[in-house]
Image 1 (tube, rainbow, N blue to C red):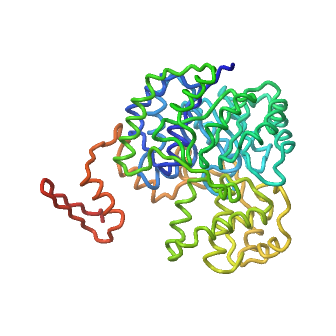
Image 2 (tube, rainbow, N blue to C red):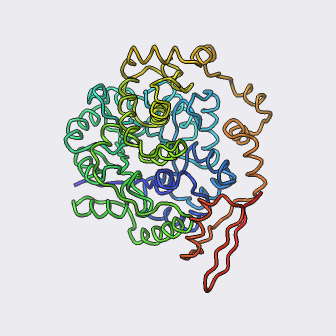
Image 3 (tube, rainbow, N blue to C red):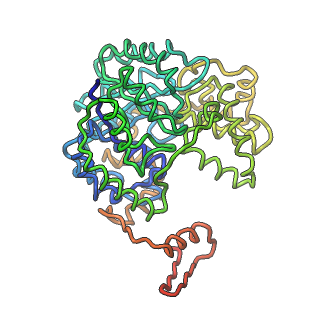
Length: 486
């Protein structure tokens, strides 16, 4: 039997997958001290996408909210996620900006990082690991799993060998964004990873898109995984990770041990369920096994984006065609792993191919950058005919003539007109107009209104579809009028 550690994903991957990164600090602060006392090995808390979304769409000061959450959880190491060559953009960020991002997160109390590059740019990954070590932070080097003819067991074992050899890497994180790992593949994959990890702990994070990840977690434990990534029940499953409550029970039934105080799980779940319902967000999700998902391997959070894009063109009935096109585009582009940014690049290209009716007639700049090697070497060669179309596209020459700039920190400060490092990251990431709106909104709220009723739920739905500036609702016991700002 084994001793299993749990890493909490409620406030990072859970809310990223189900709430679109719109969890404000006040939505978590009432129960974050309970999560801190539960006994998790680590709490995954933040990432670059949250800085962008909270500032632009929630008008919340990211740094202020982060400080409040960090202060509320003094007992557990708090983690941030990093794409090794970019912060928020789907393109490539300057190395100096990425180094500064790690240092500022450490200055605000983050003491654990998971670092990934779908194309395994080791130079960037290990440089950031070294920066994190300046603050004695824990570093989990992520191995982003994907199914393809070129993503073999030997391929992954070699990547783990290189990462685990670094003294700045503390653990290996096997990350399955599409939730496609099953027992048969784990049995051939894990021995090579365990051997290559050379005694360093192995974490497992898999999104439950196919409804099979809880079983994969148990199988992985038998094969050497010692840290499982889970989320509070209402923030789990579907495109998120398995529920902590379920996995703790499964681990106990298998005779394994853990450190969690399970009495604290229910009040946390009750809180997030209430907040999610009041805010109109997804809670208590589940997924059915759909073998088609194995072909396109689209992360669950992208499905809503696809549907919205097709709705703009009155083509919602073409979602199956888009998913089939995703599988084709991914193969033609050399089987990139379906995680940010490549899941988005493949997905956007597939939508454009379907909407325009001309495959690769319109090519985003980032797809040109990918084909040109700006992100690193592709896993497999790009289809020759497709490469010709990409490089012959309208924007290709301009993109190729203007590779992503790589200014140093002094140049960045001059470019963005500030010596304040937190402000620099904001200005380099978010349009100034959105920063101004965020500041005008005032200080971060420390709670979230849980007032809810059938009438308010109906009003929320009406406001989502209404085009008029005023919406009124009248019932026997309620008169409500809502007016849009501006």
